[in-house]
Image (cartoon, rainbow, N blue to C red; front, side, top):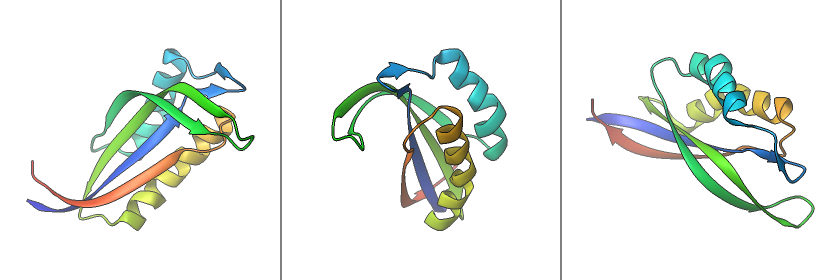
Length: 109
């Protein structure tokens, strides 16, 4: 076992109350942006998200959760490595944000 940081990024799939990131668009984004950023491995989970938008309304949408383990990495490393992925997603799919969480843990392979 060794010290690591786990990072999770939450990607909503709607914009303007409609789904703009269908399965094909997500797969393309995963292949072209996410996988090159984390070539050592990652996990993607399907989720059902809910959040309050900048306009104050509750939005519900299908989501994707990206989970990456960074052995020896710090939370700052994880945030920095995810920054270009988040920027690409928000720009490409007109998203307000991509939420990221990090935690320190131990991993073993």
